[in-house]
Length: 264
Ligand code: UTP
Image 1 (cartoon, rainbow, N blue to C red):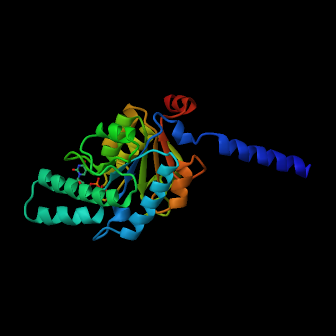
Image 2 (image 1 turned 90 degrees about the vertical axis):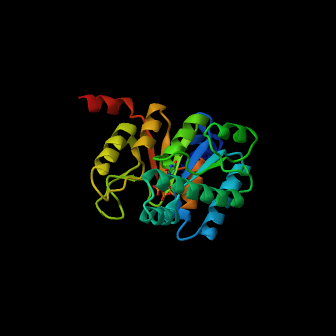
Image 3 (image 1 turned 180 degrees about the vertical axis):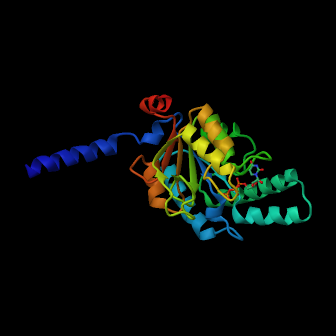
């Protein structure tokens, strides 16, 4: 009996090893990573953390996994923007400055990655050529009034990839888990439910949702799979990339039964 169990377990392991990872089956299989600026930039770039993360990306890339990186601003960008604001900069100029800092951050990542394209890209479709050449496209921000999350969603649309948000919490919660111990964690959430939560939090000052409305709208309109997970947990990130079990939130269209439930 015990041997039978052992055999079944071996078979299951073999199937797991040979079955292609789940996210790699989506569209082009490219993972578009929205890299939260606050994970890697404080008053200055956090070089040791950037190095560890980029080593992991370079290793996975050498194994055949395909990535695009969109690097956020973090505290360093907020410092620049608030200084410009204190001198009376318009919202447009504040955004321009924010974009410049995200691009400077992106350029730091380019130096730390083994196979990154040498320039910070300026248009989502440029990513296609860079991916075609076997390199890693890296973006910062692109347009005033956008966020790097929304840019990453558009890039995912352009390359038919999966959107992955690397943040400093484990995924999507009903409220900010850093402020509320009652916050409910969602392993899976529909675009509609997430949109309604984002709208609600936008109406409450000081409530930060992990993704913004333009970003979720782009994911929804093209049914792009979204994953939100903690960028500080590299083994968990690697498990996600390899299609193994991981802790995070999957954002996608609701299952048909859920649709029916909502209609009733
Ligand atoms: P982020 O997208 O990084 O904002 O852009 P964030 O919400 O602070 O995210 P973290 O901290 O990285 O997780 C920083 C700033 O740059 C400008 C905006 O002003 C934004 O607040 N920006 C960025 C744009 O105007 N357009 C873009 O495409 C990207």
